[in-house]
Amino acid sequence: MKIVVCVKQVPNTANVKIDPVTGTMIREGVESIINPDDLAAVEAALRIKEQSGGEIIALTMGPLQADKALRECLAMGVDKAILLSDRLFAGADTWVTSLVLSKAIEMIQPDLVIAGRQAIDGDTAQVGPQIAEHLKIPSVAYVSQIDVIEDGFIVKRDFEDRYYRIKVKKPCLMTVLKELNKPRYMNVRKIYQAFQEGLVVVWDNSYLNISVDQLGLKGSPTKVKKSFTKGAKSAGKIFDVSPGEAATIIIDKLKENYVL
Ligand SMILES: Cc1cc2nc3c(=O)[nH]c(=O)nc-3n(C[C@H](O)[C@H](O)[C@H](O)COP(=O)(O)OP(=O)(O)OC[C@H]3O[C@@H](n4cnc5c(N)ncnc54)[C@H](O)[C@@H]3O)c2cc1C
Image 1 (tube, helix red, strand yellow):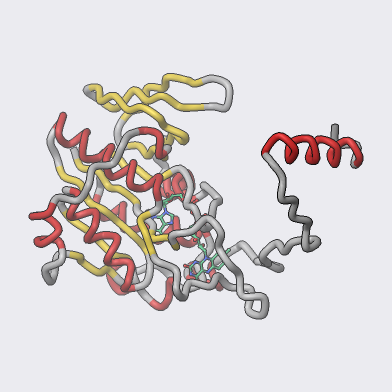
Image 2 (cartoon, protein in one colour):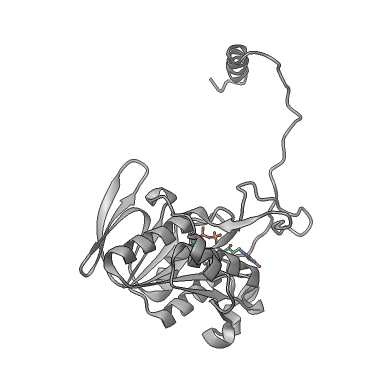
């Protein structure tokens, strides 16, 4: 079984700051991590491989620094890592991101593509299903359990108040929740191997051969009108009281404002 895992490198914070002048994300001084749902995707792929054999390829689109995320995947046990990086990809919205990823996946021809449900920075949850649309393969989102069967998988697809068990044939794509499993730690021996030269292969657009009109800002149908960090409405008031008194004060305030 050949499995591609889509991994995104994200800033290690849910509190992303936006530059008020340029409207872009402030990445300086923020540590980068593998998106938490994607770690679950890597772990899921490793468990499927342990059960059914095969090969796992970690794939990311990003700047050259994103190779760190791929090396961490190698240290967890994936077999190969491919970084899709080209200045032409800069400014990509989710549609262009998923197009670039899908072109690479088309070349790899996997049986299964696993993505995270949602990235903690962009937060759209669009990229996984869009890849499936580009590739014209079935997809299941919000997966919280995967069982391998002969011609595909039986997965548990979560909803807020219920779940479905869905049978899906290979080749297919699923987006997984971080609750799916507990990702393993990187293996010390593999960490050493993963950080050696030449293990992460870089594919640029001369390899993928996507028309320049379909890439970057130009190819992106999404236009961001304005982005901003929500500020506090007022300074607030600090009460130095016991938890019981604090609860009373909060309830009184909520009643005063007709919330309760
Ligand atoms: C007009 C516009 C311009 C933009 N310009 C830039 C830019 O210049 N630089 C920039 O970094 N971002 C840019 N972005 C943001 C970028 O489009 C999104 O970060 C990206 O498409 C992923 O969307 P998301 O974070 O909502 O991921 P989601 O859809 O929430 O992610 C779901 C899953 O998809 C997979 N996935 C998502 N992104 C990747 C990836 N890159 N590689 C591998 N797997 C992935 C992961 O498995 C992830 O868990 C721009 C967005 C817009 C709208």
